[in-house]
Image (cartoon, rainbow, N blue to C red; front, top):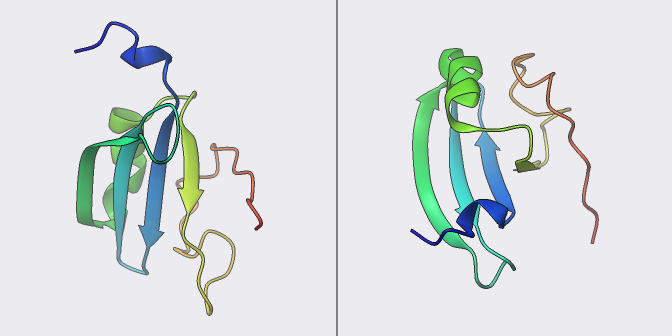
Amino acid sequence: MDKNANLLPRVIGFDCHPDTFTAALLQGPTPAAAVTEKIFNQVPMAQLAGWAKKHTTAQDLFVLEASAGKSGFGCGSAALCSFVVHPVFP
């Protein structure tokens, strides 16, 4: 593993549904050069808080999928309330 890997930004991408979430952990200097570290597919929503404590850090950036019909975070869970989420607009 590259000794500078921890200096690269890490992004956690979320797709949230009422009962499950999918997350992808990516790291790299740019979106085009990012490497997928791990994908968590259809994890029960009840495990979100524990999952976040185990797999994320305060330095991670979060990208949340928000499609029509979803309000706020879209999953109806308060488990991510401790995260600061900055919306990104085109």
